[in-house]
Amino acid sequence: MRKFSLDIHDNPLKTREDIQLAYKQIHQPLLEKYSPGFAHLHIGNTGVAYPFSTAKMEGFSRLLWGMAPLLAGGGEYEHWNEIVLQGVKNGTNPEHEEYWGNIQDYDQRIVEMAAFGLALAITPEKIYDPLDNQEKRNLVNWLSQIQTHKAHDCNWLLFSVIVNLGLKRVGKSYDKEQMNRHLDRIEDYYLGNGWYSDGVNAHCDYYTSFAIHYYCLLYAKMMEQEDPTRSERYKDRAKQFAKDFIYWFSKDGSAIPYGRSLTYRFAQASFWSAMVFAEVEAFPMGVMKGLIMRHLRWWFNKPIFLEDGVLSIGYTYPNQVMSENYNSPGSPYWGLKIFLILALDQNHPFWKAEEQQLPKLERHFVQKPAHLVLCRQDQTGHVIAFNTGHQSSNGHTHTSAKYEKFAYSNYFGFSVPRAEWGLDQGAFDSTLAVCEQDNLYRVKRKSEEIQLNERYIYSKWRPWEDVVIETWIVVGAPWHVRIHKINSARKLDVADGGFALGKPSEMYQEDEIFIENNHNGIFIKNKLGACGIKNIDGNGCSKAIHPNANTNIMNPRTVIPTVTARFEKGAHLFINAVYAEPKSQGENWLQAPNVKINSHSVSIFSGEKEELLLHLN
Image (cartoon, rainbow, N blue to C red; front, side, top):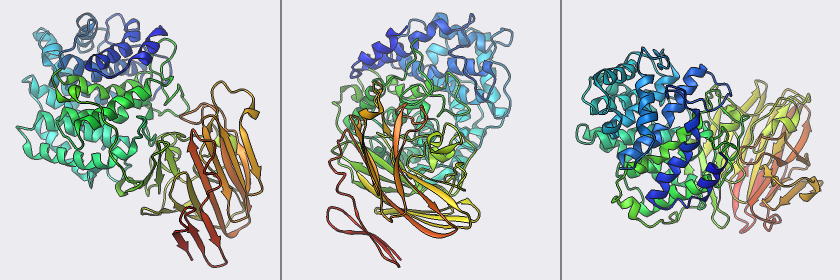
């Protein structure tokens, strides 16, 4: 089966036919994994928070995010009738042994029902019309359970909206009141300037784009005649959001990995597919086409498929360490939402447009709703999101790593902890880790106060109630500066980690990495790039940390330049300058910002112009 992933690697991904083929190449390795009744997909054996039977149903449903658009746009799938449609018949039949069952409040199957709502809405002639009367009743009855069960107060509310759109399309009873109630609740998540959080006081991440905006754009397209007010509102907000969201992408097609559910991978660009589907042009069609196509090519050039052709859990390689509690073997196929463009007919302007590069974007760009400052280094394609952190948190896996690091990079990614003991297990890149001199480190989980502008970000946080840390970061690329003001009632060991530099997969000997370490800084380079960190205040000692394998989401093995220090109780300054450049041999390592410290103040100047960037008393 290995040939399937190689096939998609060789797919040029330029034409409508290429994209249709890509979907089939992704689906093909799964054909032998269907159950006897075709209603379940046994993709793998790793565990998940919900029952295994639900995970197998999830695998079946998620393929519809790509298959329904393929059929709606006039494409053909040879296995539709005898496998997929038969699975729908059996999965919704209460008398069949593979019946998908009666759902409960907050059930994962609420999530999966949305794919069937999409299919009913955009291709009823394929999924509904071929059914006999009893099979139609079974499908409608099974989906209608969503009307009477509670969903989480976040993007989940929109799943019933999509299901209701599907029921409405085929002329069946639907819950218009619930649709309106849930859409009204989504208004409480709106932050302005096109941004939604994923719930009240929740994070802004890819759920803003590939969930809330995606579903609202589906609604806008399908209800533009019946509900023109909401439809126009959703299109206008998507236009506003697009002007910010484009900053998350690099010229090579990659995007910044940030937040949870990163195993959905190429869903990162599905917002742009929904924009095209809903006929919203925040940018010229060629720009949006280029974004989507480069993104797909970037992803399908990564080792994200297992040996049998199955899409793995992980980010740029198979990795269970970074996964969420709700990631089953079928979860990654949510990324197929990007294939919504296949619903466009062959004469649509999207297919005729020439791919265009990204427009001219600002070097520093503030996104206050997301608490980020985006910084771009155009010559290398490096994009960094500098992050203040958030004043609330959640219980998802690795929340601190996914939402509270100082910086997130499209090239260096970020790391999650493997275990609790020491710096190598903690993999503390782009963060300040602190411990009570016992080798059990804590990091920032939320902030009490935050500020951000084009030049710097600020956060105030507490690893313990009697330890207050204020952090200022002067943003930039390839250099940025971190100032930590620590006021502690405890004796502390602290470690300020730079970016994690990947070790090439074929590298064996550690001496194939060039490491230059002196009393106040460490510089590291290999063929993937260069990174480093310099201690400015004179209190620190620099070292190379070699974290446990599979902690970084981009590279299985990494090295993190780090400055450590030991502090007694009291007030302390800890100041470091951090450097990182992709595919570089460190040409800019000697151009660090100029930091001047005296007994009363800290001043930071740009290394290029001696321009004052930040002054703290």
